[in-house]
Amino acid sequence: MKTGTSEGPKNQETDQPNKLWQLEQVVTRNGLGATQSASKTAQEEKEEWNSARTKGGEASPEPGEKRCKKVLNEMIMGQILSRENLKAAYLMVKANDGAPGVDGMSITELKEQVRKHWDTLERKLQAGEYQPAAVRAVEIPKANGGKRTLGIPTVLDRLIQQAIHQVLSPIFEEGFSEQSYGFRPGRSAHDAVRAAQEYVKAGKRWVVDIDLKAFFDQVDHDKLMHLVGQRIRDKAVLKLIGKYLRAPMQRAERKEARSKGTPQGGPLSPLLANIYLDPLDKELEKRAVSFVRYADDIAIYASSQRSAERIKESVIRWLSKELKLEVNRAKSGAGPTEQSGLLGFRIDQEGQIEIGEKAIQRLKERVRELWDALQGKTSEELRQQWKQYISGWWNYFQLAEQRREIESLSGWIRRHIRKCFWQRWHGSQGREKALRRLGIRGPTLSLAKCTRGAWRMAAHYVMQKALSNRTLQRYGFIIPWQDATAN
Image 1 (spheres, rainbow, N blue to C red):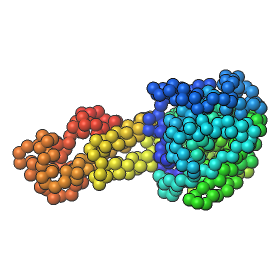
Image 2 (cartoon, rainbow, N blue to C red; image 1 turned 135 degrees about the vertical axis):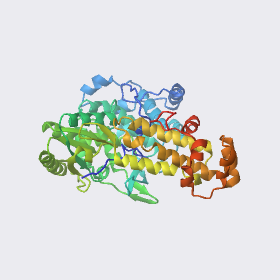
Image 3 (cartoon, rainbow, N blue to C red; image 1 turned 60 degrees about the horizontal axis):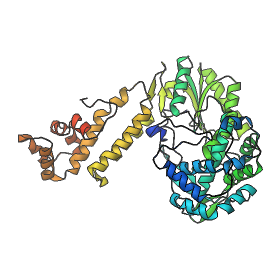
Image 4 (tube, rainbow, N blue to C red; image 1 turned 90 degrees about the vertical axis):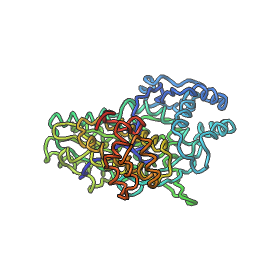
């Protein structure tokens, strides 16, 4: 089974913990499910878009609640191509930024592309004749080793996918399970962990971890399109989604045809993943088991080991038969909740939320990387990258109720900061000057000539006086879970 915990929910384009992980925030959504922009340029962007796209799809989409009830809507494409929906989609794609696709086009070039070719694009989309471009393969390292392949669409295809997502999402949202938390409006990883905590407090202290092997590469296209077609009957939309699923993956100069899978990297991928796994949610609900699912992270809670083992084997068989998904048995299993983990956290036998072991280990790795004296960055750049990382990290992991382990790392982290500066001061003269600037006087300045290793010197009382906890805090080298006066 899984030991320790995962590092946290992943961002599809970076394989880093998801940005709700970094600065998790509540966002408001309009009737189409698109995030409302609060930036000063939002209105300007809308006005620019109006001038770029001058015709087609003028009718405003129906209110989200009414549209949800018309689940077999056969006129979805008109809503997707409406002016308001496309403006919202453009703002979302622009905000997410991201790398160019196979055509090399940037976000800033997209408006001109639309201005020149929108009439043709709209006609092709309405007629079901539009052909998406290939997706650009990008391999990124996984936190636990190995590599993950992302499929990056062109910015034009990201715009169209986002527009589709905004209209389809509220239609499917109505039917999704209450136990599904990933990539859904108004829900977060924290909500999933709190739900799991309630199960444990209720006495369900055994957990079944289901690890889907390369889930995004296994998705069966026929099964997925059948599930989409149960709610969407617009043939042009279904045809377009099918084309996005089959869009080839381009690696260097070679294109690879795809007959299954929905590559991570596009705006539609999270919604399609939830649609594909919704039958699993319904099956677990029918069995009246306690579970939470965040995208392809699945945790099922039971009152005994025997029950947990039985559930595990049954669910593995069901996934293989009904969804054609393979489970990684080496990473799946059933065991006590404190030996497992969920989205970077673990829950002890008493139901207290703790930071998971893997998340702590990854934090330590990042501390070593961020305070490497050989980076060639200014002190200001070092400070800013540290504040950005550690503030985001703590914004996510402060959900933990048991914090002894992270609090015990505070001194170790500060020692790395002091070690970095000791090395950057370069030689006895540079170190003496720096120590004087930090208020060190008298015989203790002879420390500047010491030839001991930097890690050892970082623990010396003179360095701790020069770069005291209070001094580090004052200059922005923060430890967010501790008070500025902590020793």
